[in-house]
Length: 50
Image 1 (cartoon, rainbow, N blue to C red):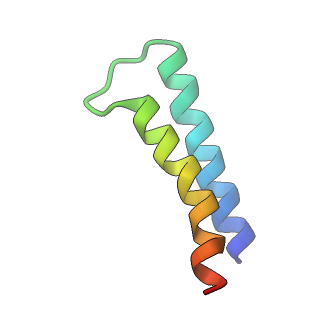
Image 2: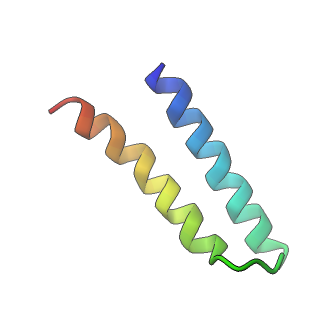
Image 3: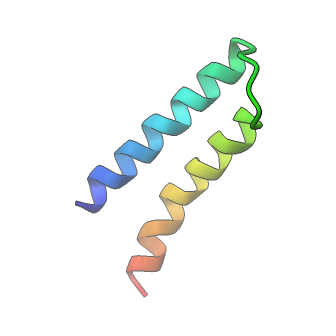
């Protein structure tokens, strides 16, 4: 289950970076969103192991 969540977050981060690369205008910072999702994929397993 946790692997599926991490995979979904990584896919969303990739989509965010891809949209930012093609200069898709949005109300949110797509690079910041992608970085936050990417960091979250590393943070979740660390929090679960506590």
